[in-house]
Image 1 (cartoon, rainbow, N blue to C red):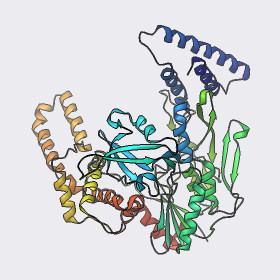
Image 2 (image 1 turned 90 degrees about the vertical axis):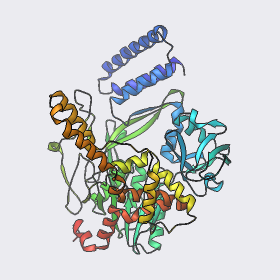
Image 3 (image 1 turned 30 degrees about the vertical axis):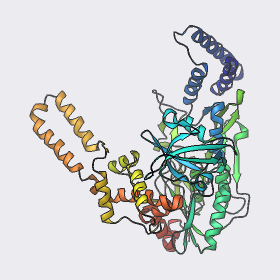
Image 4 (image 1 turned 135 degrees about the horizontal axis):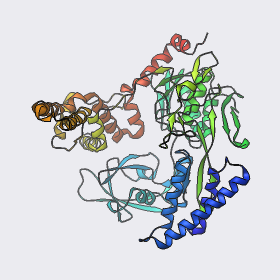
Amino acid sequence: MKTKGFIGLVFLLACLLFAFIRPAERYFEIAKNLDIFAALFKEVNNSYVDEISPTKMVHTGIDAMLSSLDPYTNYISEDQVEDFRTQNTGQYGGIGALTRTIGKRTVVTMVYQSYPAYKNGLKIGDEVIKMDGRELAKLTQEEANHLMRGQVGTPIKLTVKRFGQEGLIELEFKREKIKISNVPYYGMVTADVGYIQLTEFTSEAGKEVKNALVSLKEQGAKHLVLDLRGNGGGLLFEAVNICNLFLPKGKKVVDTRGKLAENNITYETLNAPTDLDISVAVLINRGSASASEIVAGTLQDYDRAVIIGEKSFGKGLVQLSRPLSYNAQVKITTAKYYTPTGRCIQVLDYTHRREDGSAGMVPDSIKKEFRTSHDRKVYDGGGIDPDIKLPAQEASQVAATLYIKGLLFDYATLYASKHKAIAEPKKFTLSDAEYEEFIQWMKGKDYTYQTETEEDLKELIEEAKEEKYYTDLKPTLEQLQTRIKESRKNDLLHSKDQIKILLEEEIVSRYFLEKGSVEARFKNDVETKKAIEVLRNQAEYKKILNIK
């Protein structure tokens, strides 16, 4: 990319920063600052002691400039456009497999049915050693991702190491158009309660949810659990389409309001609903954001669903992408969105930053009260508050460490190599004897971590040394350290319930892929169980929604 291209990018982005100044002053400020930037760039490029990368240098400058606005206004360079397009469309050219880096290994964590990876024999647990002859250990994660994806119809060869087999295996694939499903799972969780997991809002999300809903109704569903946990959002109009499934035509779903009149838009339901009567519970957590919050907030405003779980993320900002020179793009926050009652659920105020540059939460003193269709109180400025709040199920440190280090993953691969078949996902469970086998396998494995108690004790020792008490307290502190170490030997037993759940999900995925891993967690899913309980108790359901 030439310097001219950089200046063009900076010019367009500088317009964002000076948009609130009067026209004459704005143009002068733009010209002045671009002149300074060009002179500075030229001097540094010519005189700096080491060779510099113009692309990297300007990219860093642009990123720093945009980060002063909000985390969602981003520059997308030409080589990042394809990844950006994948995020919006859910489509790419590939083989239909997910990988994860564990230490220095790249392992296959999921293969999707009806795609080349599954059809040509790639398995969960395989370690990818080479792609088209290039060793993955010598590539960055970004390079490996770009190598795996490519033009539809082009070939790719993987060299993999498979547990229990000697030597390496060569597998060849032809890339296909891969469409990541917005609804990776739907099914009946009881005889009359259907469940839909919605993980993204890319194109056709509304259609996928509708097809799932129709299918579940045909199977006898009288109630529905819509799971938006961990769904970070996506396309706004797909959120509108999903709300439309449960609301009459012509109902307001969301308003967007920005500085420019063209960004002030009211989105309404445009089609006939799929079902106005089925009772609905929506599951949310702190990872439910943006489009997820539009769906949850709109259905809450109309008292059309009971919202269950944690307070949502609180992202009430709308982004649009604009083309730039040299095939680059910029994604700009152009508006805030408001639910039908008028709520903006944006939790952080990026307009009025603190002196250190950080964004503060919207203070309670300026949060407003709104009323739903059935006169229930709801509030703005802090995400979506669930109608039924449930505490977060935090993973213990030992369970989290076993996951991060890939020990649960590796044991699941070992287990699958020894067992040709297991019970169906909803019924599969590890026996106490099998869990004991896992504990024995763990002996000698490295899963070091520091508990909060150990961190507190470490701080106490440092403070004792500073305040000259350490000599007197040393015997007691050392005794505490010894006791903690002894206690940690039993961590695999203390956290047995959590570890078992994670291990069972990993094992089930080896036999039943993504669908199995979702079904395996139902028996331990507190939020889903609560949703089923509320939906099947219509008196409680109506009381929560203030239905007379």
